[in-house]
Image (cartoon, rainbow, N blue to C red; front, side):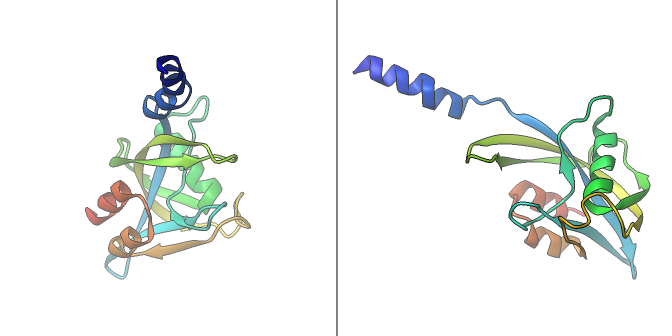
Length: 152
């Protein structure tokens, strides 16, 4: 019986509980509109749930540059000003094709939006919409991202 338990631990338990955390970089895209702060949310490609632009590290780019690239590709964001340091972070479980999941730590950079392009790489794959920070917090699923949005 102990060989069976050891095998279960090594093949199932250990990878599940001791899995390494991966890192992504995200853009918290904001604007001032009619004297109110607003946050840009986009839909995910797979499920259509509301998220902020984010992606995996890109060779040759730092976290902020990666976040800006994702904001452009996924939402057509042209930045006005950016915070050089992350304003926060959140974790979520990324579900991959085939059903496997991995914990992802996402570092979030605030990006002030100058304008939104009508034509951008993922224009046909996503919707985008401006929300108040409070409403955006209600729309996203990740509790730590909700808390970050409520602090705005």
